[in-house]
Amino acid sequence: MENASKALIIAGAILLAILIIALGVYIFNQAKSTTNVDELTNQQVQAHNNTFFNYEGSINGTQAKALIDAIRNNNQSMPDLGDILVTSDVTTGINKTKDNTQLANLKNAFQTTSKYTVTITEYQTTEGQYKGYVTGININK
Image: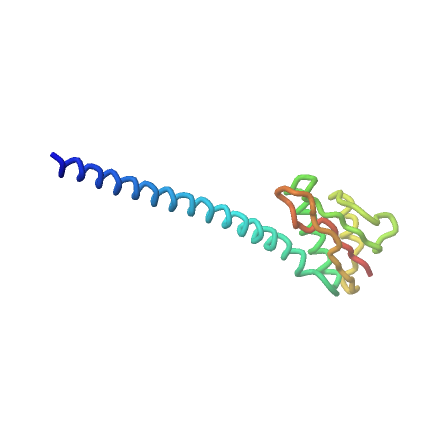
């Protein structure tokens, strides 16, 4: 009888040890998945911004028109917080705009043979889903 009670105590200790190890593995996996979410968010921001980084620097008019199309697509697909403000000296009437109609007018003002300089000026600093996204671009002659 005495050996049976010791065997039950040992079995209980083993089950308790297995439970503690399983709990530790579960907590570790939860912490690891949180880190992966942050890395994924950074990768998403980088992938989004690369669309606009490709145009940064000196570009021709055709590329400027393609950039405006990319900005218009961005502004249509994202809520106001993710919109990109375009500043340009190409036309006299439109200096700063997020409006897609005005962006279409700006696109028509670019001449395909001219050279333009593109600089990314602003990034979203507000906490939330669009933090780090490009929010301001200058296109100057």
